[in-house]
Amino acid sequence: MRIPHFATLCLTLSSLTIFSHFSFAQNDARPANLNGMLVVVNKSDNSVSLINAAEHKIINTLPTGKGPHELIVSDDGKWAVSTDFVGGDSLTVFDLSTQKVSRTINLEKYPGPHGIKFLKDQKRVAFTSGKSQNLVIANIHSGEIEVAINTQQQTTHMVAISGKEDFAFTTNIRSNSISKISLANNSLLKQIKTEAMPEAINITNDGKQIWYGANEKGLVTVIDAETEAQLAQFDGFSFPYRVLFSHSEKIAMVPDFQLHEVRFFDTKTFKELGKLILEEEAGPQGITLHPTLDIAFLSLNLKNKIVAIDIASRKVIAEYPTGNNPDGVGFVSANSK
Image 1 (cartoon, rainbow, N blue to C red):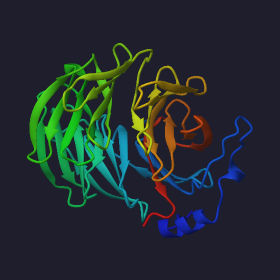
Image 2 (cartoon, helix red, strand yellow; image 1 turned 60 degrees about the horizontal axis):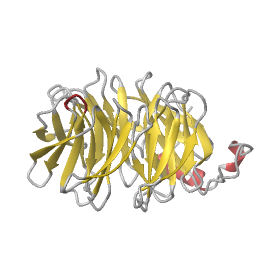
Image 3 (cartoon, rainbow, N blue to C red; image 1 turned 90 degrees about the vertical axis):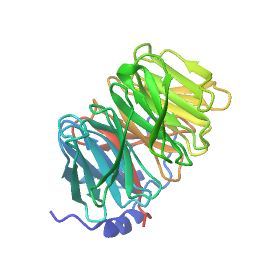
Image 4 (cartoon, helix red, strand yellow; image 1 turned 180 degrees about the vertical axis):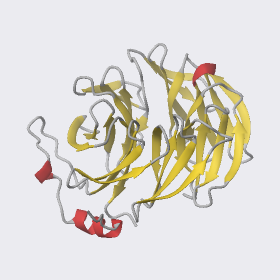
């Protein structure tokens, strides 16, 4: 079957609504305009699924390298990049306008790519190489590796970048630390001691709060990015997989992969706002924010689907099929240009 060009797809999506393909019998929440395309890695299939959000169906499947885990989408919705973590040792770059693989960037010198972020120019990405203990910056169009900054720590895994793009912070699982890296001069500045086995990490756009998850004791800790003082700590997690902020950054969301729930926190008062209990053995993993709406898309790794969550009501408002064992996910609005 011929797959439509993404521009044609966007026109098609804009004329459709989400309501005809999803039952809302279980809750009162209703989605806003979710027309667009979801892009998600399927770990066990070595692929990404492109999903028509209005029709709730997979419209294309593209190959990745071996063992993809994370995925990011450019702000303009034209590009996606997967980190091929388990044996792939590569980045796969996708042209979403043509729905094709644009290139594969070999990472023989920087194996085990995992956490990844687009830089502001939307041409370069910063990603971790856990096996080589580096934060690496690559140009996704030329395939050139521009710089590698050694963290000097074991199992460098996830990365957060400040809003001004002056600093990057990586969690180092086996060293129980966060590395602070200057992106102005591409240098390692310091190591910040953490709770045991830190993985999830995010930083507010103003660069003031770092939120990270520590897997050994099931803790999420908030620290002052400048002074490193602890601002808050939340327990009762089993595997706090990721941290995502709402658009206003007033709310932080933490999916727990092993307890199959999402917890919500006020970033000002540090009070817990509530909890979304997912279906049994859901295995929540990758999470991303709609470009303009306070709706989160969360991959359920053990159920082979994605759910859309209304952040205000803390309810699931839609769901979408994926391939096998989805993780990193991105969303492209139908009006992206």
